[in-house]
Amino acid sequence: MRDDNDSFKKAFQHYIDEIRAAHKAQDKALELWKDDIRSHFYNLRTAVESCGMDSKLALELSKKDPAPKRERNTFLYLQYRVALAYANSIDVVQLLKGVSDPWQITQILKMLAAFDNDAFCHADELVSLCEGWWSSAR
Image (cartoon, rainbow, N blue to C red; front, side, top):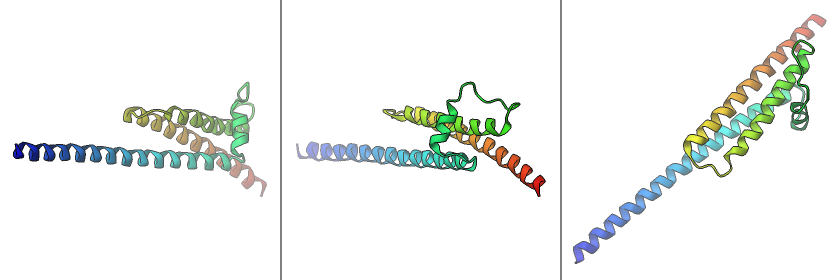
């Protein structure tokens, strides 16, 4: 009977240790995901600011109807695209509420990365456009 009790204790301790390890791995993955989200939002805020906007103005511009066209006003169009990427990323991060499936979280992070990249590309184009204007004015 004593051997059964000892083997049960060992098996139970092994079970507890495995659960702790799994929770620790989940916590570590969650922290990495949070770091990725913070990084994307830092980049998005930088893109918004490099276009001469703050978050409030960006959110207002993202709702502009009808949407600006590149042919009519390239400057406003590029600002709009950055603002739209910022607003969409805020909407997408709301999808994380209550989600614990790693696959779903990874897909949401991929969407954030796409918006981050889109905002960066349009902000970079806008800065290049402005540099072209400023260099021709000298």
